[in-house]
Amino acid sequence: MRELLRGLSEELQGYDERLKKLEQLIQREAREDERVRRLMKIEGLGPISATAIVSAVGDARQFASGRQFAAWLGLVPSQYSTGGKERLGGISKRGDKYLRTLLIHGSRSVLKHCQSKTDKRSDWLSQLMCRRNKNIATVALANKNARIIWAILSKGEQYQPC
Image (tube, rainbow, N blue to C red):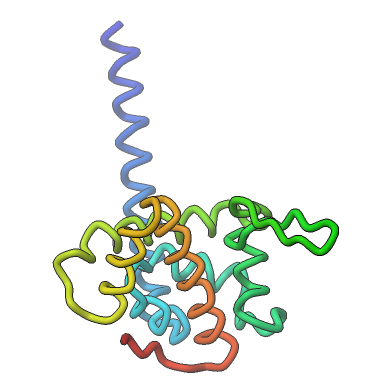
């Protein structure tokens, strides 16, 4: 039994070493790529999220608008329209699940700390959380971040916090 556990322990140590090397590679890519550095200025986006987005969409010029990019990620409401009545449901969850997950987790992190801040964005989030469910506010922030990401990548702009 000890021999089996020793082998498993060595295997875990090997995975830890490989993970450290991959993290160093991601950090280096984040430092070297201008697009990634611009994206990392957005609250809720770190090196992993920013490098994943840049590697998946490049310069984002294949999307005509920020809404189209957010729809590609599955961060817009699904529509059930008939007879001239529009009915909006939950998010569509179509598109890249991994990127959507990264954006939503980053948004959760921002929401956690927005009560202690006084900038415009934090005020907007605090008011939104008073009116709506915390999960809805999280998705709304992820949607907003997706639109900002599109503008930064497609137009080559810098992020201007409010």
